Length: 220
Image 1 (cartoon, rainbow, N blue to C red):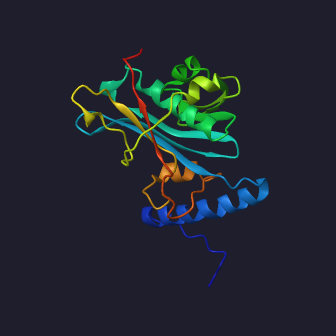
Image 2: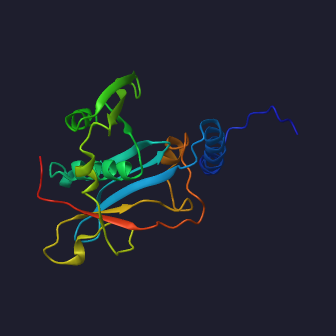
Image 3: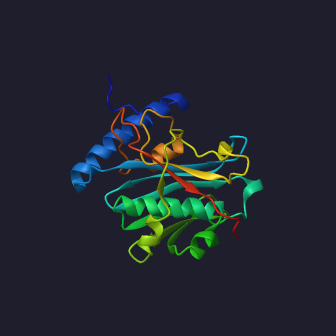
């Protein structure tokens, strides 16, 4: 067999290869840095009908948290849900011993949102995509009110991945927070690639507990 032949793959083959590369790159990076504590990070918000209306995903490793995706449905924007999700991510990052949060957003998305929440613009990659830029933001958690962040978290006895507002007719949306996610759970191709730098979660490992964060009154 010609081992020097480069074979382009279809979508399914790319996804399978991507999963393999995540494992191999994590092994290399962990051995190079001594950081073997990579864990997935994610939270979601459901409305009273049980539909996901907002959420974020990312990972923590080596004292750093990285947010890969943060999304709020268009009909629920301007109500403070993105702020609540980001605060929940920061609080859990502090609990895990992280010193900073890193994320990227595009120029046509919400760079001003992150700047208002204390994120510092580090640099922008122009032309990603064309006519726009991809901006890297960092926030130091050492400079935050760590006590206030950690006080956001409260234990809940529920076992679903996302919070649900259906506990009572008067309940506000809640942020269901998972500390670990089974590696066998579906991960989007972009997410898997994004976290390939460090991500690792032992196969078959269950979340050690679930955290629940109540969303307060609407914020602007």
